[in-house]
Image (tube, one colour):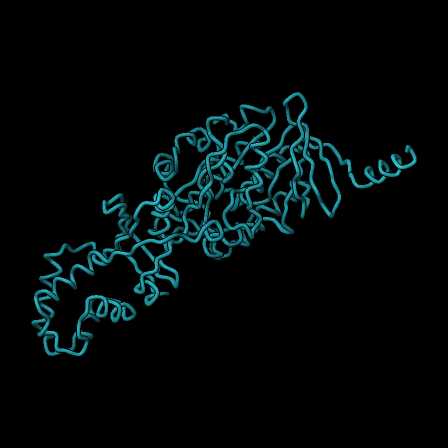
Length: 430
């Protein structure tokens, strides 16, 4: 019997790698993981980063459509107003590391930035890869050790305190020892980049409460033919209203995009958080688009009458050219039920009212959303009640810290979510 035990035990030892001790172990090499690595290693501490993918910053590379909306120029109070469910937890965090700090760090690494509409900062090059390279190279210069294709099995504890991490790499179980572990795994959005909810599992194993994760900043799905026929059309300066069970819930002003599956763009993404929750409750959800929010119905009617009087001999299809993008014209005509070939001066009062109603209240029934696969961020996550808001350390486990999207924090579009990742990571690593 013993002859069979020893070979098995010897094989077990061969499959386990016992590696060096580290001052800090960081799980995840995304936006939060890279900043945490830089901060943790700045005074010569020995830092290891475990990344399940083969490269760092894979999700960061695709943010802002590959341009990387780094942060926003809003002040702290304005910033916090953009955060859900309660941004006040970030007051102390932002006082330690804020937008000007990440911009300064990137500037030190040669990344110049530009300020665009809505207070959004982008790299001058419009390349997210420049941001990833800058952060990664800074960490390397500070002797951070990166281990790739490293799937974390569990965080190790002794008497309830952190003692290390067990992970699988190249079919071999490895153990790193440390009394400080920072979980920077992200949420569940864009799972192809490695964000598959691992951090939630690790947090639950540590005894933490997880607020149910759900997609946020996610494109919406409608079966309405009008959206499909206008796919690719981008609109500026429109108002989008969220209608739940026939009652207006909230509205957003700005840009949107029609797609082959429905609606997207900044104003739609901002509304989507509430849309997902409403759909989960089986509510009737609609989005109403106001193409001309600067004009009320009376002013629109007056302008339409003027155009008809001045160009009454033109066909209906031509009268719309001063009002709408070309791609939207046939959609409006078909939706309203107009004869596109008849002279404009034959438009009836009823038809005129239908035109104005479509311009001010084009309503789409929302049938769903694109899920975590296309969600920019994850809402929900590790309960903030169980996190020390000044240090980002777990209140349940000494030496366990959380940063970034794994936390129950998410924000509107505009660079806010990345700044949350950068700031919480910096504080967790301090």
